[in-house]
Length: 304
Image (cartoon, rainbow, N blue to C red; front, side, top):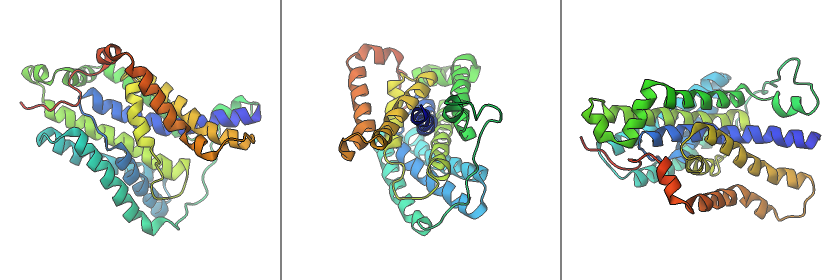
């Protein structure tokens, strides 16, 4: 039972990274913008957050630095695809490649740096309950924040006027423009907010999840988060559930290795990405269902 509790706890931790990044990308795509640069933004945010934590010792400032780095890169991407009407897919790939190279260059000075002792978080009174305590009540506040973020984003998109306007921009920017809404500014705000969330996820990885800096440490999580939005049919609650599903698959490899299962480590390392491919193939079998949920103007440029 103890090993199962640890697996569940690790699943929640791993899923938090994917959930925060996935919710940020969901915000982008609801506005009609596809950003393939999540991996690069998360890498730059990871080194920005880690460097800030090394110099200041503050996790809060590290998260803020990560969000600022992600939002800044997203702003450059947004200016290119929204005002200059560059190809969204090519620009996103360029951002991802730039982020990987830039973070590796900046991170050279921090490969040997170490953070101070991490705070052990626990809910008083419930953290010591057998199984439930270790599994659910000994996590960093960001784990619970991801759940609240999903709920807040669902409320924003489906219950607030601003969320309805954002969805309208993603469905028909021409109609929204005709009604007097500043489509370009709304899209840029959504892109920057999504970039900030991707940055928060990146900073969480380097400061809390694995408190160190290693080149390429995001290891494909940005791409999995991107696939997660399609898997979740652009709904926040499903993004959260999908993130925990992929997080569980990721952690399962370590659990199986710890249990002594005789499977090649390469196969176990493939599990998260294999699961992503299988899910996308299964979803693609029903394109009508995808089109019914996908924002109608996703990936399409808007010229007023």
